[in-house]
Image 1 (cartoon, rainbow, N blue to C red):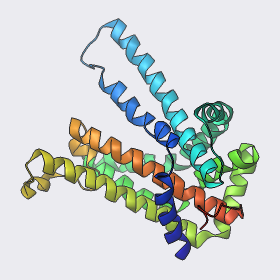
Image 2 (cartoon, rainbow, N blue to C red):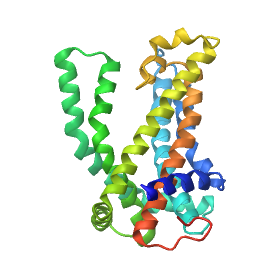
Image 3 (cartoon, helix red, strand yellow):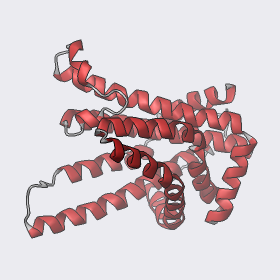
Length: 269
């Protein structure tokens, strides 16, 4: 528990000492704004082609962001600096392996999705109920949340292949199961708390801080009730930029600590 507390404390401190990392962490929010500019009611062929181009661009930006934030956080934590160009180069070099890891991860959790949606269809559940059930299913799975990131850090540290990096991540996880399982669950809980806070803040701002207006809010997944709300999209976008950067910084510190990698004194935990 002491390690987990230190990872969270130092991870929070580290994100405010970096600058370039925010450029990459903001890319998903920019992607969302690009998608929001398209009018889905339009059936014009040219606009449809433009929408397809935007989707491809969004996918590319998402991959660059995912790799870039992790690469920046990893290098900062070991006392190195990575320029924008170096980070973009890393995104090109490691994208194939990281996408491969992502596909494997999706295949592993696919049965959980199918189970939830099968139950939902049989019971004619509403969207909010489905999202709540998904959270309950994935809560225990969150204890394995570090494995994907640890595999990616293995690419950065040793230029390993997918199989070797996953094997190393699993060995690291099982060797420090209690702390890493607790860290995975805690990060999921913190993410849901921050997500709920964005919904609460949105509703209160738009209602003139009328507490009664919170009665219709889905606290577990505010997106089900506020998904088309522009203010919510903005507030949640800022929240995601900060929280995703924070959670990755925390996992980098855990990886380096348990890998026995020397961390400079200013980042040492």
